[in-house]
Length: 102
Image (cartoon, rainbow, N blue to C red):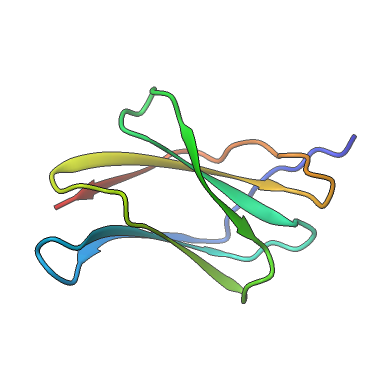
């Protein structure tokens, strides 16, 4: 059984909007070799229950982006990520990423 450990070369988070009602968080990361894709998890509190909100295949370019449109103004959100291989085995969760949506 192969174990995957997810290391990010860089992560950049944005909590921004184009209109007063259009809030989102964008998560950027570098593509990793030898993984089939990534799972993205979100929670409302740091030690809360993290829910898987997205599955991203590793077939896009070298810099991957996920846009979370299910966010609301004046809230903190916590994100974690993991990678999975072609057999569906999931690696360890990353550390958390904290974002405040203004």
